[in-house]
Amino acid sequence: MFDKQVYKIRRQRLAQFVQQQGGGVVVLSTAPEVMRNRDSDYPYRWDSYFYYLTGFIEPQATLVMLVQPDGVLQDFLFCRDKNAEREIWDGFRFGPTAAQNVFLFDGAYAENELASRLPNFLMNVRQVFYPMAQSETVNNLMRQAIGDVRSKARSGINTPIVAFDLTHWLDEMRLYKDTFELTTMGRAAAISADAHVQAMRVAQPGVFEYAVEAELLYHFRKGGAQSPAYGSIVAGGANACVLHYRANDQILRDGELLLIDAGCELDGYASDITRTFPVNGRFTQAQRDCYEIVLAAQAAAIEKICPDCHFNEAHDAAVCVLAQGMLDLKLLTGTLDSVLESGAYKRFYMHRTGHWLGMDVHDCGAYRQVQDVVGDANSPWRILQSGMVLTVEPGLYIRAADDIPQHFWNIGIRIEDDAVITPQGCEILTQGVPKTVVGIEDLMRQLREAKA
Ligand code: GLY
Ligand code: MN
Ligand code: MN
Image 1 (cartoon, helix red, strand yellow):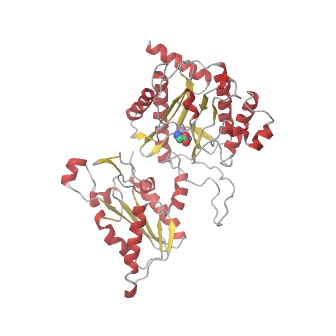
Image 2 (image 1 turned 90 degrees about the horizontal axis):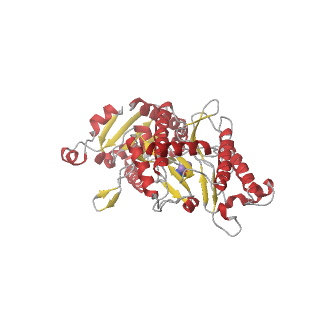
Image 3 (image 1 turned 180 degrees about the horizontal axis):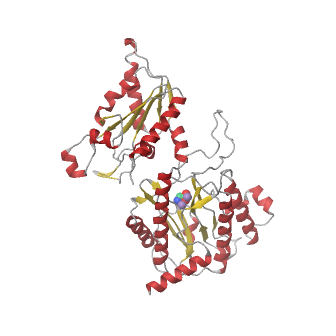
């Protein structure tokens, strides 16, 4: 559902932050189109910040906001002009007049007027706000525009003297999802959960990893999602111990596990799910022992995903369960305290337990409390609050090695769900795909019976 008011309200909220800094001009461009080869480009994906403030998905667009010191906002869109010839080839474009009306801007211009008009917006303005050091295009745009203003100094025109990184405020805004965003994320999660179930249906010994990937992609798209939110990981056997495995080109073997980390992007919002299950539908004892530890680690982490917990409590809880499990399985020796202290557990669990999730799979937002003290790298972890969304994804990765019993070799397990912080605790968005040993084995049996 497209609600143009949502974007206008976000621009107005941003204007309040800009006013608190004394006002100024905001400049934010969308992402450029990128050529793949010759005249074929990569599928276009707009800039998340730009979309967050505009809802506008065409390339070659820039938002300019003027915020007076008293908070009065005027917002302008620069976008592609109407072009009958190009619209025959590439499809509809709004053009400035329609875009202004539909997306509730105070004004709109053709994007090829940006370079000449932007200096006028910046004259006698003290402060500018744009994404700092993030894009060559924006850096060049600002350098040129500010240079143009500076060249008028002899006519008594003042040039901006302060530049703020706009993403500082946008990151904070994006960290707290509104109802509109949570609804979309819930739908994205449901599509991804269904795709994982369908992947369990097709996975069996002799099938290639890419065939399972194809099933995921098919169900993402069939569910209405525009694309995967990131490159799908479909990793059989030892490949599951490669954290960012992407080749997806090996055959699935009887007796091995399959780890799938895949999620769709729907209307600009990501989902991120990992499930690990036996290719033949039944866990071996060693696989089950490892799996139960990861599942218990995830449950311990989810307990700590609630308002007033800090961001790292879930990770600490997961690490404790995983480390104790490694000791119980005799993968490590020592005491819980000693392996936590030495970090020995990192041999089998080397990543963190979650990240913010939103428009980007690894979404923006500070993980530690935002402080204005320069150079304070170790501020406390951020306190979780209602409306934040994060993943919870513990894992256990056991590579073949002489000091490891052979029945544990090449077991790689990760279980990942998406959680929204609610006033009471958290809501798991990705419940549509089972994760208990019994739930997985039952589902795979049912899917196989239905296929037979
Ligand atoms: N799929 C990327 C992640 O889980 O962080
Ligand atoms: Mn993740
Ligand atoms: Mn993931």
